[in-house]
Length: 137
Image (cartoon, rainbow, N blue to C red; front, top):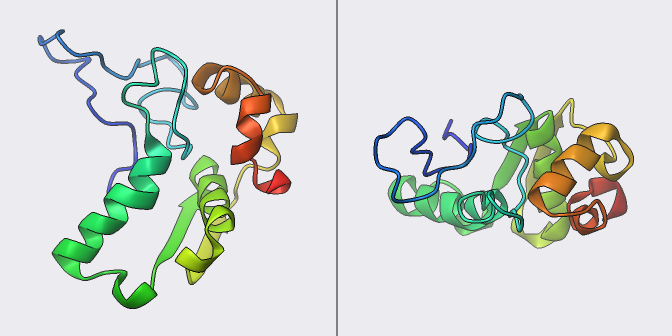
């Protein structure tokens, strides 16, 4: 499976000319957190464009290089925060996906501490996270 973690992580590189996605000491933020949103808050906004990556870049690559997803036969799945992301992506574009699977997705992130942490960090507020909450779509 392709890695859907934020890209341009040059945190281990000696090249500091471009910003990297911060590597915070938490499993649910930063480099390894694939909650499929496009961040609007610094320092994440430059490289944390995971919604765009999962909905546009990755399908285009798979269709072009492997003919996967052609003829409108796209499916999306995920686990935990990725499962919730798969649900929001499919709900926002019902005609774009023929199948969606979510394995133990997080639930109602605008109403839980984890969602508060993620949405305030990546988007600046819980209110901004409502468009990424499957229970509100």
